[in-house]
Image (cartoon, rainbow, N blue to C red; front, side, top):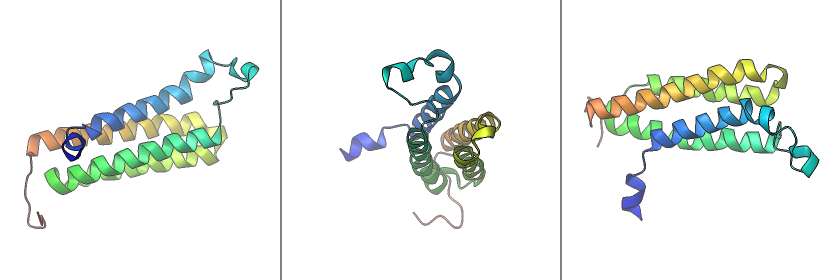
Length: 133
């Protein structure tokens, strides 16, 4: 089981989760506005949206911490990701600005995962003075 966990590309999973969140928030209301007729309400459902943010956060923290600690030691992906997650959290509370908060949040989170992915591949376990492994 431990070997299978190492083969997961956590950056790709993070990008996928962020894009799925963006699709949910932007496209789902356009195509599935009839769901309440069937008793299903996932559009502007706070629990579902908070779960999506939590999923993106958990995947991102693992992925970016792993890349930072084991490969590139660059804090930019973590900074971009943190700002993106904060914007998603603000989106939960400031629903009138959800589109204005969602678009930069997704761009920042996807950029952080892409930057982390690229830097992990370029440096491939680069060591610096503070590296303790």
